[in-house]
Image (cartoon, rainbow, N blue to C red; front, side, top):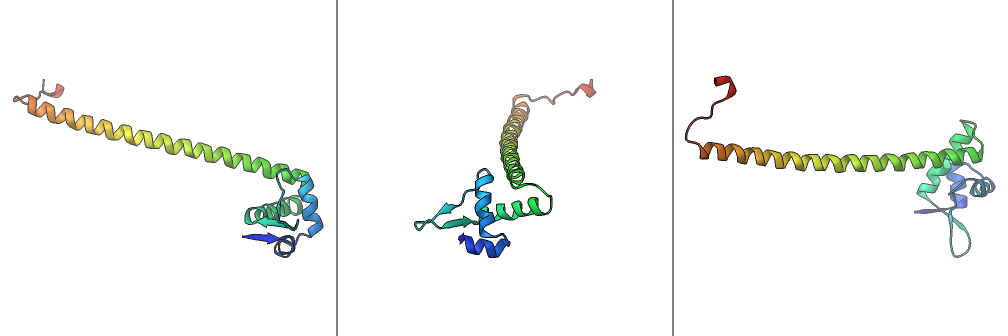
Length: 126
C-alpha cells in the first residue's frame, strides 16, 4: 500500500513542506513519484517518518542527525541479520555433524557386537 503526501501528513502530523525538506537532508529518504509527479510513500517510509519525528521532537536531534541515526540503525540491523544468518548456518552444520557422528557411533557399536563373539572388556573390568 502507498500513501499520498496528504495522507502521510494526516497519519504522522508532519506538514508536507517538512516532509519535502526531510527528503533533501535525510540520506536515503526519497519517496517515489507517480506518473503525475506526486510523491507516494510506502509503509516503510511512513515508519521512517515516525522514527524521524521521534528523534527530532523527543530526542532533540537535528533532521540531519536523525537521518544519520536512522542510517546507522539500519546498518546495525543489517549486520545483526547477517550474524543471525551465520549462526543459523553454523547451527545447521553442527546438527548435520551430530547426526553423522551418531550414525557412525551406532554403526561402530553394531559392528563391534557382531564382529566379536566375546564380550568386550572395559578398562574398569581390568
